[in-house]
Amino acid sequence: ETGVTQTPRHLVMGMTNKKSLKCEQHLGHNAMYWYKQSAKKPLELMFVYSLEERVENNSVPSRFSPECPNSSHLFLHLHTLQPEDSALYLCASSQDIGQGTTDTQYFGPGTRLTVL
Amino acid sequence: TQLLEQSPQFLSIQEGENLTVYCNSSSVFSSLQWYRQEPGEGPVLLVTVVTGGEVKKLKRLTFQFGDARKDSSLHITAAQPGDTGLYLCAGAGNYGQNFVFGPGTRLSVLP
Image (cartoon, rainbow over all chains, first blue to last red; front, side):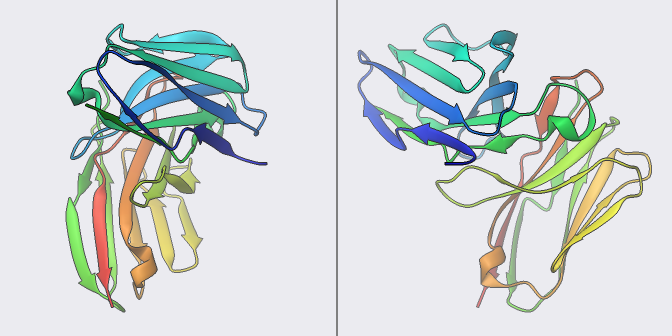
């Protein structure tokens, strides 16, 4: 299997639930990203990992907790979410974090999250 | 903070028409990417441009990177319903992980 995969594709959860989103990249990339895409808003960068170390955390609430056990896998652990957290959560990877073409990001299909 | 603006925000045209959408910034980017995103899916990379003034063609799509590497355009010739989607531009800044997206142009091509 090639590219970036995400599971589950759809998730409905209550505000008291705990769930996790999974992302896997088969491209041999060193950097992975979580984005949030809400209706009528640009893509919002949430977290960046480079070689399994978090290098950016854009003021994301602590109810979102990322985990990167190795360069191919990225998780987003969710707990006590709010209805406004409902969105499409996208994972992406790139060869490196640097300049030029190595920055090009390849996206997974996303997880459509609905918080009731 | 580097920001990207895209125009128009929405565009609805008939099949066979030509169109151009724009991506603008006051900042310089080391590279710029164009993506197309269909509903419920992730963005799919169309092209990466790196050199100021660069022009790349992908079938009926022509991408241009501004000479100063602050803006870009996407021209579609003889649009088809399959071109319908959200077109996003994204820029990589000069500080590594500072990767920003524009708000997108939502294109609808009617048969």
